[in-house]
Amino acid sequence: MAGIVLTAYDGSILGPIAKGLGWIMDKIYLFFSNVMGIESVALTIVVFTVFIYLCLLPLTYKQQQFSVLTRKMQPEINAVTAKYKGKRDQASMQAQQEETQMIYDKYGVSPMGSCVQMLIQMPILFALYRVFYNVPAYISSVKNVFSDLVNGIVSVDGYADKMNSIYESAKLKTIKVDFSDTDINVVKNYIIDVVYKLSDSGWDSLKSSFSELSDVIASTQSDLSRINYLFGLNISDTPWNQMKASFVGHEWIVLFVAALIPLLSLASQYLTILQMPTSGAGNDQMTQQMRTMNLMMPLMSFFITFTVPAGLGLYWLTGGFIRAGQQFLLNRHFDKIDLDDIIEKNKEKAQIKKEKRGIRREQLMQTATMNTRKSLSEKAKLGEGNEDILEQAAAYRSQARPGTLASKANLVKDFNEGKKSSN
Image 1: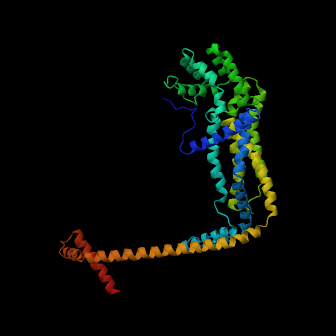
Image 2: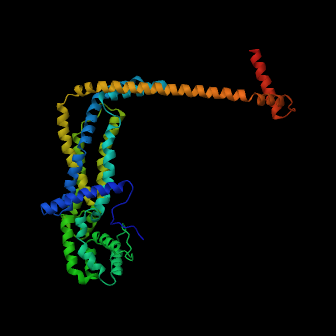
Image 3: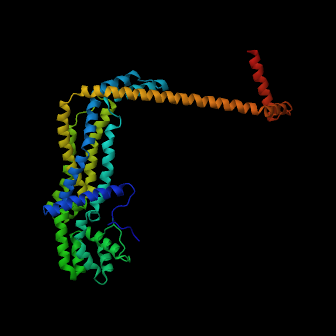
């Protein structure tokens, strides 16, 4: 039996993350639906994005603090680098590492401080791809939109052949279905998988194949267009696919909106970058790498946004503008605070870390010394226990026939001993 796409993604890492994010989105959707009477997946994504970035705000603050302190300590880092330039011996490299670490401790930052937020955001981004690709699997209210239609389809004789035909004509290669499954709930999930991915032409095929359900089909299509579309753009389909379809169908508004999502995503990221102070001074290698990354990453995301669900692009561009706003506020905040006061508070912590490293280094040296002594002792014991064997080997070599390996070994031994005696 083929895998059920409708069920939530069951990967060991992204699966639980996707389910957790989907649960949050479902509650946001229900809030707007029940309290405000607004049923919109796009609005849910925007609010959900705000929620996620509020949760990440402490990490964003730490990352910004790391960036500010890195700029302040960069001259000291450069001085240490210049001090040990060209020195590749182990003692110099270890001393350079220790002095660099002492500077990081002094300023209270970690060399990996700028990577933490990215390491947290990447699984969220990949998990959201799963959620936005198949919204009904995570937002129960959206799945319920299909209930009457699916119940009607399975009550029609020969529905499996008709659905297979619609599936084939729609060329839904990204999902797998098996309408012959004996579990009716699984079959219903397959049907929702197919119907949720249908384009307008696919809905026309559905109406012609199930003419007796024309009313419920029209009602379901109308409900889905209201909750899962943004200005005619399907949240779960890629902008590129919808741009091609809208160009053929002369739907210029949809084409404009589909192209606007990647463009706004690109603009939001560059807006954030423009507000980011440059990390470090001069043309050092790290600064150049950071500048290149700041240039290339938005361009990469621009092209990727064309090929992922539009909902993910909406999350991306909303997050970009939120980050730009956060960057603006954090810049003003760090312009006002006293960095010297932060450094002063870190001095005591730095001293404690230094002492701990010294203790750990002394323990390692003691362990290494003990292991060396133990090894020498074992070798001595091994030699004492093998005296008889060594004597037998010497007697064997003394009786060796000319031309054998043993006789040649005796010649080498005599040569070495003669050389030592002459010295």
